[in-house]
Length: 243
Ligand code: GEK
Image (cartoon, rainbow, N blue to C red):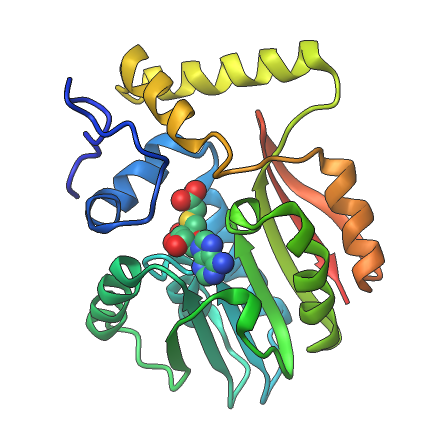
């Protein structure tokens, strides 16, 4: 797995973070070393797919990157006649996503439709499972409710949404403690102080975290009947919502 050294060089780019070729090349290493609980979340997405995906329905992986959640769902879906729609707006991600899906050995009859598109423009229909694994945080705050309303409207009764986000705590003291714990996690994963601070600057105004309560209220407003966190690891939270 190529190692993420993007913010290591003295000459490192000071431009805002973007999902370009350089990022896509090292992406699995970047997520594994930066997002606490990432591997467990991908595993849980597969487990949820085996329990909740209904026959003849669709699954959506919105902001699919390199199809980690898509492939985890495909491996575990047992319901017949299902299809997964995987969407990402980054050309660099989609190009590599197509190669990885083509190379995946699983052949259980679940078709995967990979779309290079903005998730705000994609139609959602007959969905029994939708995954927004660390994607909503990159959308302008004003676009988030409309997207969740569209997802809820396109779901079958009992459909589930996995919404994983980096969050901000309302209490400034807890917020700085969680940020410090996350930085310590990155140091343990061999990121230097300089790399951590450069990445933080690059993500400013690109990744916009909100408090968990704001996400839960918005999910209810969007039409989800139940919503609650199933994973919380420092300032990284994954929420399960049921339509
Ligand atoms: C995983 N879910 O490995 N439309 C489509 N894609 C978008 C948009 C948009 N408006 N905005 C951002 N993206 C993956 C990880 S990464 C998380 C998701 C991270 C895409 C963007 O191109 C990138 O591939 C992905 O959302 C976010 O489970 O890098 O922290």
